[in-house]
Image 1 (cartoon, rainbow, N blue to C red):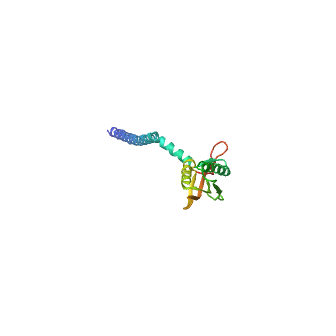
Image 2 (cartoon, rainbow, N blue to C red; image 1 turned 30 degrees about the horizontal axis):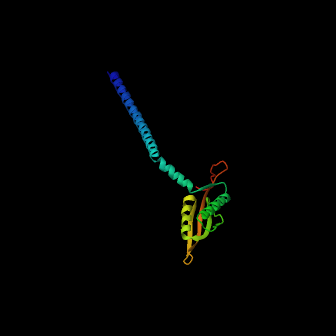
Image 3 (cartoon, one colour; image 1 turned 60 degrees about the horizontal axis):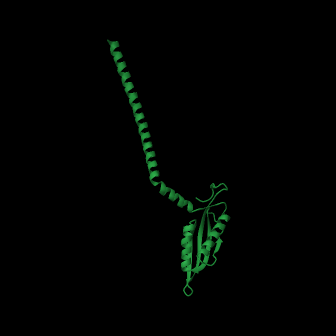
Length: 179
């Protein structure tokens, strides 16, 4: 009788031990499955977001890329700006403009540039509109426009930051320049 009772308690203990082990195993599996499901849901939502906003994201990325001129050297970039700005002034019927490069400061990825010209107010205004559209990598820092009331001629002096990114010959960005 004693052996039978002892065997029943051993069997009961073993069964309870198995129940506890299986319960812990199930809890860990439920936690793992819940984490996997949350991760899948997060990935699905990310994919849905990218699909819904891919056009606007690519537009923002392209606009951000327009804010920097990809160049091989700062001097080539300044030459490019000089040519583009002089072409704009010629198209806007302005007298030749003057572009002066300020000494490069510690700020990497941008160079201070001074631009000055004279002309009618309307031509100067159109020049700035075109500059904003065609050369967004020139950021105006300070503008001083003086108008002679008699001749209606404006004298414009502006300080700009020329924002650039240095690229290597194969078209890849160097890590040191720009954004």
